[in-house]
Image 1: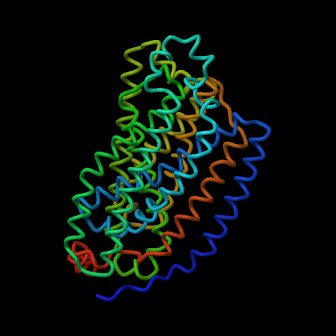
Image 2 (image 1 turned 135 degrees about the vertical axis):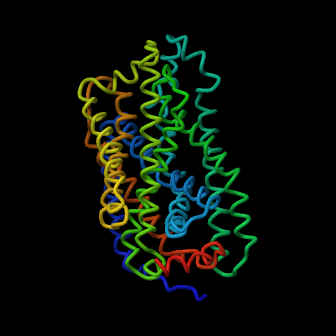
Image 3 (image 1 turned 120 degrees about the vertical axis):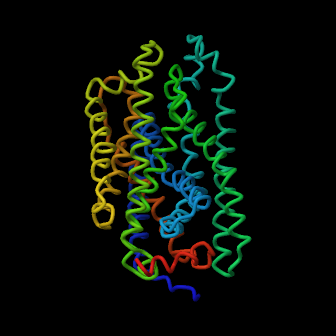
Length: 393
């Protein structure tokens, strides 16, 4: 089989515009930081958590694909790989958060520790040196595992080698375990510890599912731009879109199950150290955001994705996917901002500029990675074996 020609030159202007918009927005954020340091770090953290969720979710979806196979995975595999190849950039983008630790986290302020016995009891885990060390471990794992996943996949483009497929599968098993642990603890460190007196044992799982959902929605939306072009046009069919829609439906349902389970357990227990987290997010205007999440991240996608016609029509599925991405940004906003404005709805212009700035930079790197690789793993023995099925669809 000959290597398909990649026709991605049309993405270059989009990459350049994305970079330009990102740079301008970041400059505006830095100006905002000069006038309001605390607000800059709060908005930056919110935006960073949102954009980091896409490569993290792609990381989990990619390793799941290597373990279970399926045509749906091969169609989006290189999109997922392009996303996880941005981990070095996300590591660099994390650095500003290190300078804002005292501005973001109550446990990092000596005056707060002096007057709070609960915080002092948690200092063995919640302290600045250990916080930084754990972040280094997370990124080291994400970057190293993603390096081998993409390297071996790229090696397959130059030779049909079943051993490379076996390597990808062997790495993906333990890789998923490391993924679960690192995503859980990073969510605890970077988001849950914003309110260090509160905790939830299901918190990390909610972030894992949310990341997977937004990543799958993102690559589905981006894939829509490419599916009508060679070479992906040669290997896509309506039932492939249906498979992606089924995956989105499963993740939407799982997200709703975990989110409702956490709410129900905390609300029924009615413990004073736990219920304030929800009270801060359903009063003072925040309840409107909670309702938006229920409707647009669960109810509407759930009802639409039950339809076979919706899932098999690429245009409709793409529109739904982009809606899920946007709602996930609102979800992250709802998780982070009430920690600083409990019970009182608040939005700052930096809350809009920061996602645009980080997103512009991240998208430009993602598109650059996408341009540099073949759009599907045409020498993967598993993929070769199912090409006949696609041609018959």
